[in-house]
Length: 225
Ligand code: ADP
Image (cartoon, protein in one colour):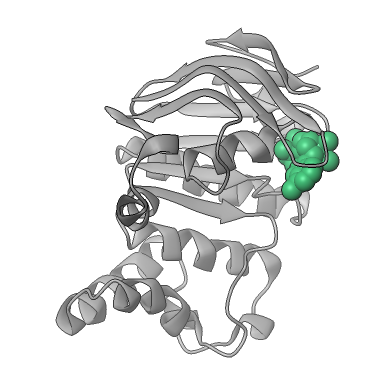
């Protein structure tokens, strides 16, 4: 479903963020991408949504070469591959409902569909009673749930999570992981960058470990020690 073929990424200042990466991610997996800060995890995720172009090699999504696809296809790609972040990236002046509806309206989804789907998804992530709150009225865990809801209304095939528990305390982090596992069981591929050893070692998922831009380990049932 996703394939990295001999991918290297060198930034204009000469930083080599990834080097000769070969990876295949199958549909419906839940994969951890681990490694220390600066290893290249975020770069890997950003190559998948065409925020960055590979310097060498190619990134494939389904049968499409992501780096070579015409730019008119990028919005469609980013609907199929959603992303959530450590810092949530919610719009502070919009309510929870509006934050989630915003992306749907931006792509012209019918009003009726927005009216039905947004409360439905907010209920799935356990936020039905926060719909009219603003981001500053939420706990960090709730804010992350909103960002997950915002990704889910696009009904993505793949969800990229960049350190989604990085700003959360231990038990809240676990609640978010359980939600991501649920989303994965509903059929969405989840690729999560993290350096949280506890989470990685508690689940028996595939683990891809990157160090200094190189994939140094790829285990179907992995750990991170
Ligand atoms: P991680 O997500 O594992 O912490 P990143 O992918 O963010 O790592 O970064 C990998 C390397 O690329 C680091 O050395 C980082 O400083 C560098 N890097 C990331 N983004 C840029 C950029 N836009 N310009 C130059 N260097 C960058």
